[in-house]
Image (tube, rainbow, N blue to C red; front, side):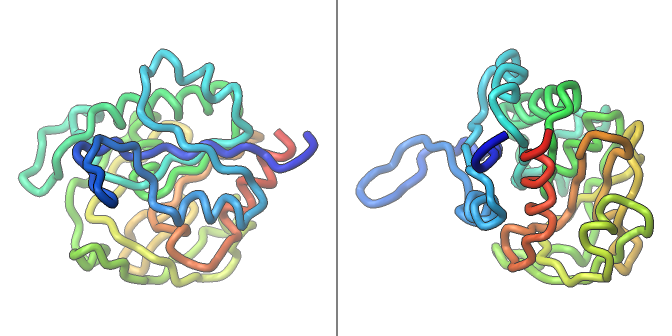
Length: 229
């Protein structure tokens, strides 16, 4: 490959969003995501929800895929009853992003899941989620911070070998681990904070929000893998 790798980032699809004098339906992505891709050396492309049948063709045009954070995954995706604390579902995102994950895993395209994206990666591989935990979200649209501890010998530990303070905002977490995944980082309270699939393909999920911090190492590792895939 020559030039900067093209990294697709999934997006929100929101009704009646307002900016200036306009109030329209909009595909949205917090600016931190494309800025992080760009700072890490990649080109960012938005991937708004689409027909899941188009996911493989979409991924085929990309060098890497990022599944962004967002609303709670619908518990029906992993065969669970909805908890009263689980948020409003986003079925268009669930189906599209699960299809993107499957396409990336099938094609060997480097894949990074962020927060919801990590949870969807786990669900895509047959895992489950804990629908509510305390202590990892401050509420009110404010990101907190806590320390994550890498698991020695994992891909994540090669990228970030020391305990790191990370920006966090989530109230759900990995339950049963998906097939073929291993845990590569934990929070101090034992919550799974990163998962990956060992082997040749670059597949990593992190529960925190690197786009809200200054540490480029995780995204730089994805961009580097996308440059050589």
